[in-house]
Image 1 (cartoon, rainbow, N blue to C red):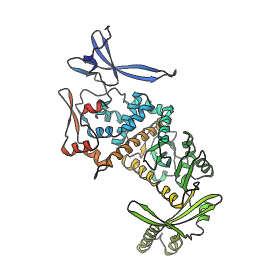
Image 2: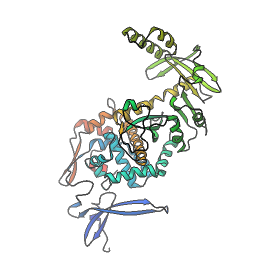
Image 3: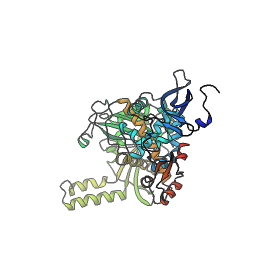
Image 4: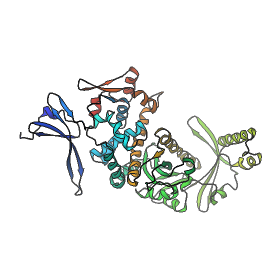
Amino acid sequence: MGNYSVPESIRKHKPKGTMVKNINGYYYVYEYSSFTGEDGKRHTKMGKSIGSIKESVGFIPNNTFASDSEISSLDFGEYAVVAANSTKTLSLLRECFNPEDAARIYAVSIIHFIQGFTYLKDIKSYYDMSVLSIMYPSLKMGYDSLSNLYDALGRRQANVLKLEERLIAESSHQVAIDGHVIACESAENDLAEKGYKFRKIGEPQVNLLMAYDVNTGIPLLSRIYEGACNDKVSIRDFLAQIELRDMLFIIDRGFYSTENINIFSSNGNAYIIPLAKNLKTCRTAVHSLEMHDRFMYQKGKKAAVVEYKDEIIDGYRVLTYRDLNESAAEQENYLRHIEKGDASYTKENFDKLKYFMGVTVLQTSLEEHTPEEIYSLYKKRWQIETFYNYFKNKANYCSLHEQDYYKTQGLAFIMLVSALIHQEFEAACRSIKGRTSQTCLLEARMVKAHKRHNTWVVCNLLKKQSELFKLLNTVPTVQALVHT
């Protein structure tokens, strides 16, 4: 068998993603990875020693190994249910990245999803204290290693673009695009600048742009841009990175410009965009608000009567809508402020504004769709507002300290993968009556894994947690996760 052969009785104790070497009759475990070289061929690389294996004992980690031998209790439940319900995201990563990078991106993104926005320096602590350290025992999760990973994701984007191209190809081709302002307290970051929200947030900002499938809820693209750069400028680079054809862009008024309208209409693409009040086209549209056509707009159990007119202004199709329910609500709110004596609300202004309340003016390149169809498509855009509400209020992507341009772009990709996990887990939880993704995570969090007699055992599994695990197709054992 040779001096370096390893018997099956030793190999069965080998942690996943490692290799064992026989040195003078002792079996040492090393980190092991594969990568694609500049020649395009697969190569393997042996890393540092992380422990040894004794046939009668099993794997014995070094003190420096990722799953510290002193840790005998791990967070299990929330990681188990999320891992069991984000397999599509993991498969996509494995198709686009080498196995080690895919595992690290996935583990980091799960931590971001479960814990909310997490700084690089804190990720290893969450990893060490969770069952992720058993699922992926050989991952390098220290600050320097993760810093290099973020840098690579921002600097070497071939695999990032490959994944995003896959998402675009499998999308419904109806896409909302919007921006989200994030404070950035690092003066060293090239992207951090005083933007239009400087007075509100008190810090320089960066701008996150994301594209979002309005029918499937799946995020598609993610980039971070300079804080002082207008969205109408940033979107040109955003859309240029991947060839986009036959898409319907449902976008916000902040992206309007003549140049962008041409981009939104090229390569078989189409657009729907609301017009700002100061635009000449909008002023022409609302010069007369006589509308003789109407339809019933139904969303869920709520219905509204919508009046509209459809016209060509300066060569563009422009549709003006008035939601009568929304108009009545806005008028009632304004009159209530007048009754309270609020100085900024007056009867004179009310008489001027009441005809514009509940009014939306849309410009579109769609020619064959009816006004009702275009209105319904536009209403789908508000889903991205809900999506950004998750990023801001639940995931807490409100303030960064990142100093480097490329690492910031790497973080933008981690945010995208975290959002994919969020969408996949949300979809699984929607099938459970009376529970949200948040309540599912809170219930699962009570379940821990303890090391007893050298074996990891799942504890605190009460009846309600057991039922939850069953509903989320999660096997409540550490071994089930290790073999995924």
